[in-house]
Image (cartoon, rainbow over all chains, first blue to last red):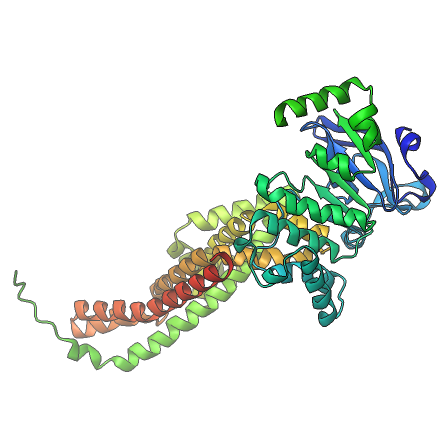
Length: 268
Length: 225
């Protein structure tokens, strides 16, 4: 309901549509009914305190977490389940893999594969999963590493790269899949402050190019600058949603204001 | 201090052809046991990683029993008890392979478990997120990463297997130690014979561990330099 109020696109042609999504870990319910539409070429930011459910929501989108109830659709296709005959049955792991490669993920801890060079990390998905010709994959991978400013580190192993460089390789690895949407899970939280800028610049550039993105972040200035829509999650529900100017300016929502003032106290 | 003992390797060296054949037997035993033990160990690990509780409990029990029982007892059970219980009897070499493969499989499976468990969950999630299947992840990501980490304990276990082959002498398999004992009975030169036996084991094992160290240093330098 909140989404249709502020979203620029309606549910019918949304890229991602999330309905009544719930997720519990044991007795703890982390997501308590999320409804959200995300349009094409949109940048959507998830903000909220630790434990608010924002990372879990992101991980449900590409089925790294299996939702307890509700549904997520990418261009109308139900994620993780088949809904033939109105009954949800879990898809085979091969089918889930096929769906996942349309949504590339960038992790807080980069998660590069330590036994592969930067170039090999980027090439792995297209080469092994999409089975594209090697020469073509390599050319594109080199292009992507150039784009994130690492053309001189193609053959470096992750252990020889700084955190910021590793995260930019991870972004190139995600882009190599030519995904419909990029999912970022706190992409700068594990970085030294002086390395954050390089990563944020790359993400901003993607936003300018019209890439659809969902970003879980603690960087409020960044969210303000690049997000079309900001979602404030609080205790497993969407407590506030709107354009960045609404969340960081116009909102009268008490919980949003409280959260932001606490954030400002900590980060000046 | 003078012990007054006069070393005489000459007598013993007359039996060098017996030793050479024994080396062949020991190597054949060791290689077969290492291959069977590792393969069975991997199967045990994969079954134990099974989420179905009864399978997990059964495999865990098998692994724990195999680890706890002295390998010599396994040999004797299979050699003497199995024919009585099942009517199936194996020769000494086959018994050695079966008993010591089972015994080492329990240790290999624990090594595999440690290796796979040490892989950060995030690297597996990253593989899922690019759309890799479970088999692709095992082959491309977790397999190679686990292998690098377990390489040193895996080599240690192989060394133990080579040394444990001498237990097969108990059921008259003509491996190095068994033949050594036969020769020392004939020559009354147990000290010389056992020294030669030790030297043979050193000559088999040291190059292996040296090679393993070189390989380990090489990949460490490559990936983690």
